[in-house]
Image (cartoon, rainbow, N blue to C red; front, side, top):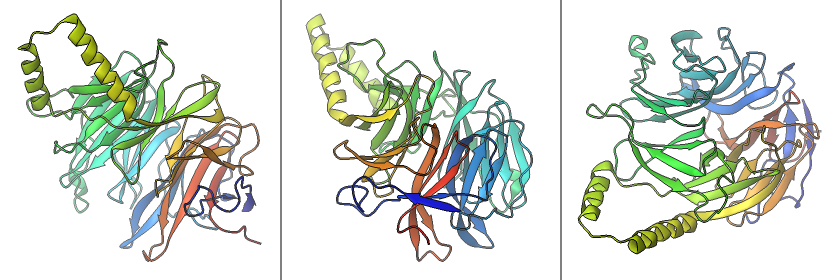
Length: 409
């Protein structure tokens, strides 16, 4: 294990907040010959104890499971071989690993024995994003791929009865004019089910979809929100990655495809009303005589509302090209956002001002692409101690765990 540190603003990573991770630890247990494609820390259960588990996938079709603390040893869980590189994965209910791959394959695996429970190939191209929403009766799963489709699945999970656990056929399909770039489930204050927020290529809009029901099998488009309502350009950027604030579920951070430097947007979500309320409003509007001038005023009022929802719109100065993969991760206290870049540097953006207040160097090779980020708390099995971590993977074939404190001697 190696370590290094580079701080740009003294000992505090973000203004007036707790010290952020800044000490880089290269995970030597993972000797890589391929680029890192996905990193995350998930909660798993082993022998009745909840433990954090570091997941890292690479271009050589491997998915590595490691302990997120020194010496970063491999987990004892053995997984089957994958047919192609894993692009996204998550752990459901502490036991079940869900993965998506470049071949279009979606797999559900039992982490207790490494057994594959379900396999589906509904997509015809890269499944680039996976998101889920757990509730009391089961879990919603959405997968987005570069076949311009998003599939919705509904699973009922019983940890004591694996025979009931399977992915099953999609319960809904969203067909898009361009490839989806990012998807995320968010809560709706007036609906019992979540809303799927979607960003797609060559569009500056967020699209809001409801969940399918017995009477409406296809996910309904509830509304949309323009992230650049007053822009005169045809297409100025694409929302390429986003993450919900850990302290406010109505606030979304968005990494965009803007070149030559990534622009970060932090906006408040303008969730549309439930379908019944929206239909009633539309019916009332049709009964009112409208003129071209009133329609223009209504359109301008909507644009002003969308513009007012944007809390931060800033340049991160993180270099990227049209072929980059923008990524971001919130600090768990909501004080800032980490963003990746193509220069081997991770930048910390203050969430209230949009200022670049941190440059993490010394972990990845200078001038190399940082492909993926994860940030959050890693809880000790005892539950008494937790540590803030930042995990990054890059095209320099390095997996880096950034920690707080002083480098080990």
